[in-house]
Length: 206
Image (cartoon, rainbow, N blue to C red):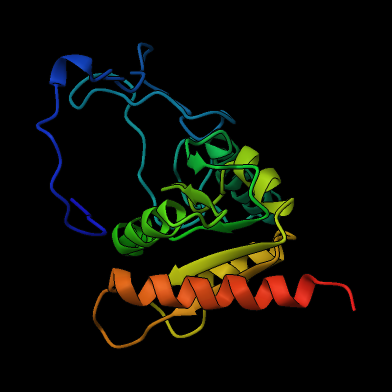
């Protein structure tokens, strides 16, 4: 199990969890699992539908092939699966604000605390968060493109998420920290205030 951070949560009510099982293959042997452009059904171990799970480029059955046209087809097939994630869920609050805060990963907790503290003080700040990073939810991207500034608290040297957002046409700036420790909410309150304040001053016509 991969976790981005620790957080206390209410005990989940498993009766409300919608369990979706993967489609299973119901045919006979000779299964061309890699021919379909959609997510293909999985055969049950020990039943019909055996195929080769191959780490090299392969044909519909899974056998190795070096044909360029097959490599193009399979690469396109793999990346087309990302389209299934473009309607991923995301959090959003105060979406009418021209400046928004959008953390990712383990920065969410302290960033959310800072956002709540600042908005309680009267700051007009939006909030966005998603666990779907690539591709980002299409609806969220469109909303972020309309912002004057998106502030991204992130724990890395290069400001990776803000760089990714700028590639998508979003005016994003990072608040980075490389101490090896998580953000403190009080530090983010100050940093977000300064970042948003600087931006607001720059936006005032001369």
